[in-house]
Image (cartoon, rainbow, N blue to C red; front, top):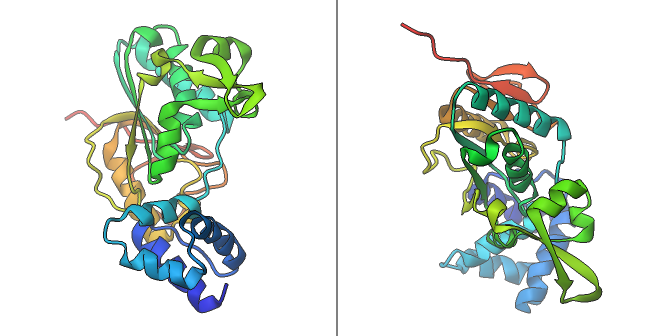
Amino acid sequence: MQPQLFQRFATLAYEKAGIAIKPGKEALVSARVAKRLRALSIPDAESYLRYLEEDSTGEEMACFLDVISTHFTSFYREPDHFELLAAEVGRRLAEGQRRLRLWSAASSTGEEPYTMAMTALEVKGGAQADLKILATDIAVDTLRQAQEGCYALQKIEPVPEPQRSRWFTRRADPNDPEGSIWQATEALKQRVAFRRLNLAEPPFPMSGPFDVVFCRNVLIYFDQRTRQRLIGAIDGLIRPGGLLCIGHTETLSGIDTALRLERPSIFRKPEERSA
């Protein structure tokens, strides 16, 4: 892909979703754009760019952002965060709190919010609590997959057998006679609400407050200005005393926030001082 064409795609990704694509990613962008060329039977990237810019519905822009974004995720990814979540939920329930609100800010295909749900529900008293998880993502097709809650065996393998048997049902894979699909049960799915949200465009429509927010492996795709705006918005939505978990390779360095580092990748909002 020619540098000028690459820059035009990169500019669109930044303007529409805050995704900062650095020089040197020409081959990656070319490969991902090629998926849309095949889907639309468009001959070349230049023609696709014109099609994208002229699309007044916004539907193709959503598809472009879907393919250009990285959606790697897995159940129980960065497991110490889920251990912390279990401890936090347990503490709050023990203190008498019954309304719990969690947010998976970049939910991808659903593995993260479903793991959050399983973790919280298996804490003593969690199944009886008023527990809801908001799961957001910018990609429409990805959200659709997450709402279906269907996973092939290799995707479900990180889920321990007791949790797999409790929260998923097994059925035949229509695309593989010898394979199987694991689908999230209604009891699990009803705890999670999936919504489309562009994290690069705060303020957000929800009011919170959230007890725990997972915004993991997202900041690395944004520039410092977009990170500042996003963390500022999250800060305003977290309950005093609540937690923010970011990816293990991420940092809030250089960001002005009241959130305080508790340990690497984990931040807590200070409790409000009594008058």
